[in-house]
Amino acid sequence: MNLFLNPFVLYSLVALGAVGVSLALPRRGVNPQVLGGIIAGTAAGLVILMLGVRAVGDGAGLVNPFFYVFGIAAIASGLRMVTHPKPVYAALYFTLTILATAGLFLILASEFMAFALVIVYAGAILITYLFVIMLASQSGKESAEEGLAAYDTESREPVISTVACFVLLAALLTLTFRGVKEMGPGANIAQSAAVIDRLPGKAERALIDAGVIASGDKVEVFSGKSQVANVRKADGTVVEVSAASAGSKWPKSLEVENVEGLGFTLLKDHPGIIEIAGVVLLMAMLGAVVLSRKQVQFDEDQKVAQSRRLREETARL
Amino acid sequence: MAIGDMMMMGSGLMGSVLAQAAPPAAMSDVHLAHYLFVACVMFVIGLIGFLTRRNLIIMFLCTDLMFQAAGVALIAFSRYHLNHTGETFTIVLITVAAAEAAMALALVVLLFRKKESLDAEEWTELKG
Image (cartoon, rainbow over all chains, first blue to last red; front, side, top):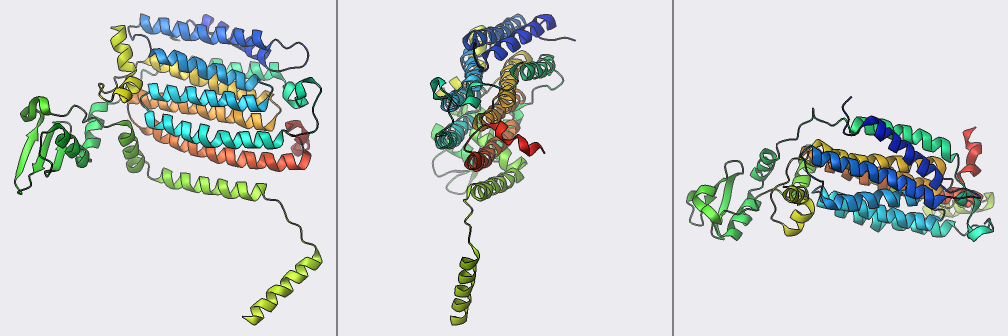
């Protein structure tokens, strides 16, 4: 088995992380949360450090330095969210996790999803969570210590579930650290060229902005691969413009950007997803309304009166 | 070389801000493993939280943490394969997460009205 890290070291660090997390979970009495957090953080940090050393050793170079900031922030605030006894603080730490995840998405060249994540999660979902927390935390049954409910200060089976989950983590990391060599990277250039061939308007705008063609000209056919455009001039003649003929005036920004590529893939390759997402959201909205509606109970007299009134109104009509 | 590579790998952040970087270079296996490590750890932390915490709201927050972890893995694979399919699935993931949050919170409000408590163990009679 050829892992990125020495299996013995990796599994020791996973075990160390398990000890740290199980210490960090809230419990009654002696509560070494800070110590547990430090131990778990050390284990995660050591794994990331060893991965970095391995990456440099392989000649791949370090990952983007922002990865370390966002990745460590995501893991640390996720751990704090799980271990914090107060629900409001847990929700706020979850916001921090979302922002760190959005940062990771940005590093991964996926800026649309990063902003969508911030808008949908931090903007909408988290506000709903905070509302419900505020609504539901007016419970009268509070323990004496710090005004927290008993179910918040004590976790259920911390050791057993931590062990079980870290066995899962060890298995996941074993598979992950084997590498995915059989799945080679795709051909981005060819794909991006294929997308831009279907967007002659974008090519036209870029060519006009770069001054290669005049502003009344229309790009009829564009080939991103061979960098050639068939342009219909304002007087009706068709000329061929290419990167070779335009020289240094040829625009450099003819790459398909993230939002364009994502929209193209979404609408061309997976058009059903939008329909399904719409149905899922509609059903969720209906379900939420039905669930949280207060049941209004009519007694028999009211029902009889209501039906009589309805009958009279239909008779009048 | 290291700085150049870091700039290439950072073409998402640097490139989108400066808007004229080279197209993203291929991502090596070790770099993919970095992101998958973060995703795995976030997923497992969320799972631990779901199993151990007794507050219903925090349990659902933990499922959202697991959704986030899946999103990181999908986007990392999308970047690794240099196509947009992973991002497309992340849109579905965010939709499902939003639907789940709405349903879950409606359920929590309903349950809270019945028992005036957010303790999951108040509902152990549901196991039959």
